[in-house]
Image (cartoon, rainbow over all chains, first blue to last red; front, side):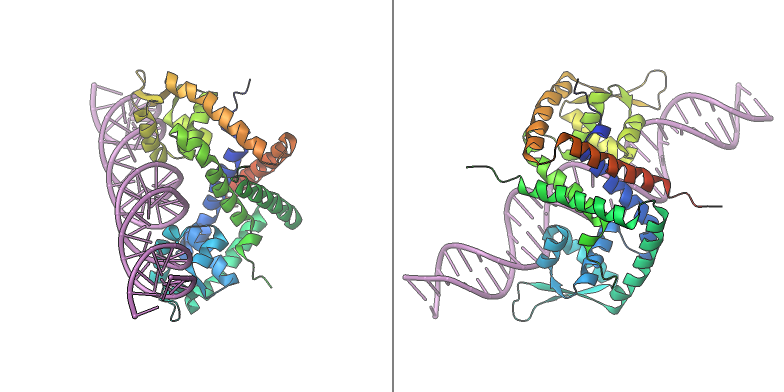
Length: 147
Length: 147
DNA sequence: AGAAAGTAAATCGTGCACGATATTATCGCA
DNA sequence: TGCGATAATATCGTGCACGATTTACTTTCT
């Protein structure tokens, strides 16, 4: 009776739709020389530049062991700089280069065209986003076990 | 004005929530010796057993180059068998072993406990799932370009 | 029948994602 | 002052995920 297919499960819906989103972005990002996770990192930096690796990781919920190599690749492409802070040699500060800042325009333009293609209206998209974020909040709180 | 943070974007909401779901499942799956993608593959096989690699890939939207090594790992753990079809030597048929079928009970039990912890009601979860699937459908249709 | 086209799966290389551990620097405190 | 604890980042190993290519087999079309 509970012979559910993956299609019935919300976990698979999330998994496959996140994947589909990434596929949808690919033709926009590849010409810009970016991967999807790299684009997300840049989005975060466009909102707040000159942050440490840890701060960035908290923003986009990735560990430093994921970010370090990714940031090195973005540095190699000339989109940002990684420099040890002078007052605390433990932290590495990430700063956008001019090229990194210029990507925002190109990426935003691409993303807007992209969203124009989907049938999701602005309000509807925001509603769905907030429901998804509320699920995320819920998921990140459950790990605590009662005493 | 359009200095959006990742938190404002539906693409990031999906990305981070899918990740959060995977983290939430981890403590349930690790004791069973499964990764999250492996669990999804098994879910698909519990719904329909004895399928080809290609059919499985269509079900869960993964390419054969992702599935082949994953299936080899599941085979090594004794959850399924991979055998070339007799009538068409190109296709490989995937069949659950008894151990693979037995995992369903354990996994379902774990998943039910898990969902009991989230505050999402049955109906609410189905609604959200359908909205996410509708977005996925939308995303997978846009790639076509007009003539 | 036999070559060309097509199909299914596998292989290879790159880039995430993360647990576990290592490295380096700072802080707290006797 | 100097030593243990803490903190920030990096390194390493495993497992996805996929584009591009390869291999093996089947179908199609002369």
